[in-house]
Image (cartoon, helix red, strand yellow):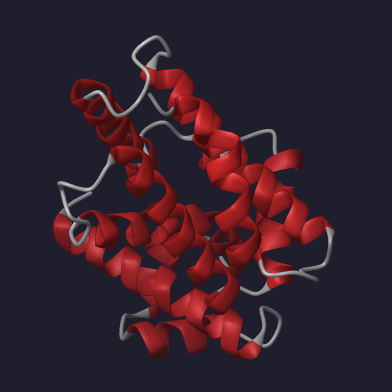
Length: 193
């Protein structure tokens, strides 16, 4: 995808999720999304067969957040602390801009689909950035070198998904952001050197 095409698709996704949060999924129309994204209906249907297809785009929104964070995080920061910061920022965003209903729908599609499991797509920016952080952490002696980077990434992603699923199952009756601030460092402490 060209940069221009990628920008158009990203605009549509961002606008859609803003509207889903503000108005609810059912009360958001394709016309609303096109107007908010300042694109055309043709562009919308070029990237998405309909509004339902946008449920699978949440991982793209997450990746956009990771890209934004990767540009602002201090490169000198300890790699373990980078992993924890990424999670805090992502979960803060989820808790404050993604409705529980939509997160639940998106996660449930990953359980029931026979096709694309976008959360597990190793080509996502998410996995590439985690690989960079973990590799750097091993090279600096901050993370254990006896655990393969792929296993570190798997553990991190697994813990994030577990925390999101639990939050959804519990109906969002606690703060995802605050719970993850306690749970994730505890889960991942075995990665530290």
